[in-house]
Length: 420
Ligand code: SAJ
Image (cartoon, rainbow, N blue to C red; front, side):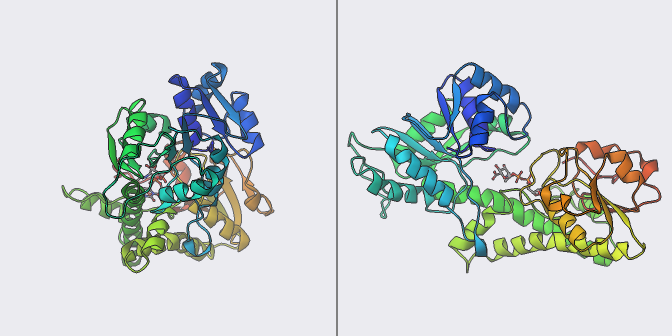
């Protein structure tokens, strides 16, 4: 259920490993694209995998589910106003599988979700399928194993793959499988062991939900630390990249990279799910979110300050995606920064983004924003704003940069940087 960055790679992997897979998506254009053997997202090697899965007849896409042994829900879990989780896609996917469930089926939630969501799936299904038995979490922690022939197994198995390395990580990464009850953990664990070479750890659904949220919050907090340091360094006239390289020489220090902010659909979203569950306690997690959300504003102010030196500055913005070497623009701080600079008419803006053939509508509407090739964008610029460290930008001739004001939010052209 859901043929996005997680659903499509998972569906095609399972299909090429011999399962008959029906990939369900609510958007007809996605279903048609996949049934033609093509893909609608950019991910290394996914095109080849999907093509071979479709040609072999093992993968087909459809608008509606059908009867199956296993149902995997991999739909988005965004947040609404006030950073409260929006579970409407999970609820819709759950309702749409309800008519097709049979005794013994396994239902897996892979979408990153607030604590308690997997149990909610059982609550949503119960009134729709009174003939079936759905697992319940026992408050006392003691479960009575169900002997009913009408039972459904239900577990959370959070996805953990990194965009850009999805196909490798789908197989290699360890997985956490949390059943609503113990039997569900066993059945779901055995399902993943069929195609995962990493270790499959079993726990309960609530722990699995919080484990996933904690992983992304850990990263968010640590990136916030790096971003906070970068702003402190700017004020104290210290080179943050040199500082971090030096601090990281310590055997027990590993500071992450500052950037223009944190984007993507995971790290910029998931910590709020912990905050919404425990608002009074999640102070560090909320604080980190605030630091990372303020970082794009900080970059915008810096560009505006430097732009004042020119009558009409030519500003070349390198990269729009949320991170290097992906074509994903969700929650991208780079995109947000360029949109604001355009709206505030800070100068003539040139965008260089190797993953785009045309500007997104939010930028195309401005007459003084254009998309250009790298060399032209750089040569015409007064100010060079590095927002994404795409590999295409790494080997720019240093001579082409000499007369430019460079705001390098990624430290991409620093000589001393170590590869992380
Ligand atoms: N970023 C920095 N500095 C860093 C590292 C990242 O500013 O040192 C920024 C990136 O530029 C980007 C954002 O953080 O804007 C997130 O990028 P990322 O590469 O850290 O993570 P995602 O969002 O692509 O994927 C994360 C991964 N989670 C962890 O590494 C704990 C991935 O394993 C998860 O599966 C994914 O979230 C998800 O779907 O939840």
